[in-house]
Length: 82
Image (cartoon, rainbow, N blue to C red):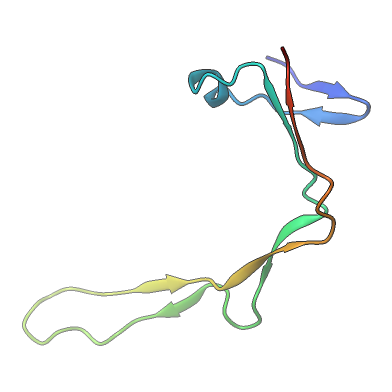
């Protein structure tokens, strides 16, 4: 399926909605107003603890700390086609 446009906005088709029984539903979402903001010096924070003395295992962890920011809450919509 090719790209679709509606008033200059690209429409992205998600077949998962058809599988869930929501084939006649459209979600309008503008990522300019709702986005993820990362915390300074806490994004992709790597931690490598010391290895246990009785096993040959390497442990590593990766953490990311952030928050969802909403600048305009009335910019999203859900449309049902009856």
